[in-house]
Each structure stands twice: as structure tokens, then as C-alpha cells.
Image (cartoon, rainbow, N blue to C red; front, top):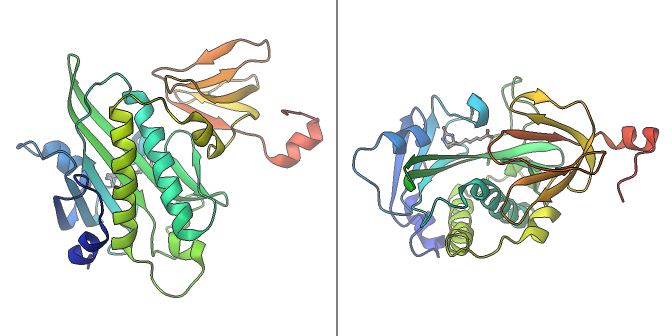
Length: 273
Ligand code: BTN
């Protein structure tokens, strides 16, 4: 069982994760926070040992073995809805850094919300918001990290966990990982809230496909021409350059980028440097 005292003793954050609820089994921590009638305090955290209807991006399911991993949601009240679109990548970047430090393995972001190490998915992020006019009514940051799970449903494409990445027999402390995530996220969310320019160089260095030529999928449809992924613009939108030099920024579309496998690059002689 998740040990709240152990978590609190590693928590340095002042408001993120300070108030928390740990539940045995619920549908989804994001859905739970969404449905809450009384408004939670800023930084409220809800963690479930088991989610029976965990949700991922694009209506996918998030499956996670009970009691082994981290499946949690944070309630966050942004000062303005202006930069909401850049929030997922800022959170993904913060998580990638914490998980890299924990595992001593490189953890990268696959646009927009996957956390990948050695080509395998270790976690994912689902940010959901409700706007009323120009005001953010509710903002929920859902995070799923595979921590101690070592066998997975064969339907999950390429999963891994922190325990597998570290390669040791002992279990990884979920409490310490969660505390480190809250510590880092609190700092980054405060910077984001104060309108600090995004640290694009650092985000780009952790972004799969940055600077590469590949295929993009826009709202579920593949675009036929190869396009160069030039990262995020200063407003946080994913930006691409077409073969004719046209710059495309995607503001509201669901974008996925597929860099070609490295062998294909050398076979076709495509050079992106
Ligand atoms: C993805 O990879 O598509 C995002 C996965 C997000 C999963 C987390 S687990 C906690 C929170 N509750 C949910 O139902 N989903 C998120």
C-alpha cells in the first residue's frame, strides 16, 4: 500500500501534493477530480492504487497493474488560459527529467505526452481542462508512470517501467518518485504560471524527432509529404517545415510525429543536419 508518511517526508513542494487522497480502486483519477462537486484546493493530489477505467490521450485506455505503479491526478489552477496548449509538454519535460535522474537512463518526450526510454513507454500524461468563457474552470493533470510492473498486457505497445529500466531486483519507492515529481512540477508550474519563456532548448533536447524529417499525423490522418519537425515555437505550438519551406504551426490539432527509422534515413540518403 502507498505509504503517505514516506511520501510526505520526501516532499519539498509547498503546495503541490501537500493535500492528498489515496484511494484503493476508482474508475480514473482524472474522472474522479472532474466529478468532484466541491472545488479542490490548488495542488490537490488524488492517487489510486487501481484504476478500472484509466484513460489515455485520444480516448485510449491506460492499463496499469494495481498497487505497482503511479496513477494520479493533480488539480491546478492556472492564472490564465493563454498558454494552456504548452502545459502538456512542460509537464512531460519535467517528468522526463525526474525519471531520467531516478533511472540514470535517458527519458524522452514523444510528442505530445508520452515518456519514452530506449524506445519503450514508461509513462504518459493526460491534461484535461474545462473553460468557462476566458476562465479556466478546472484543470486536471493526470499522470501515469509504470514503476514496479514487470509484465504487461500484450496489447500495450512497447511498455517498460522504472524497475525494468534500473535493472535491479528491489522495488522502486513509488513514494519517492511521486515526491520528486511534485517537487519538480511545482517549480515548473510556477514558472509557467508567471509567463516565463519556455526553455525550448532544453525541451528540444528531450523531444523525439526534433530536427528530423518524418511523417506527421494530423487529427488521425497521415500527411503524405515528409516534413521537418523544428520543435515548439515560443508560444509552445508544434512547428514543422514542409519540403517547400512552408512553416506550419499546429494550434488546436492533435499531432503525432513519426521520424523514419534510422536505417531508412541512411538508405534514402535523407540528411537533416
Ligand atoms: C497517455 O499516455 O495517453 C496518457 C496516460 C495518462 C494516464 C493517467 S493515469 C492517472 C490519470 N487518470 C487517468 O484516467 N489517466 C491519467
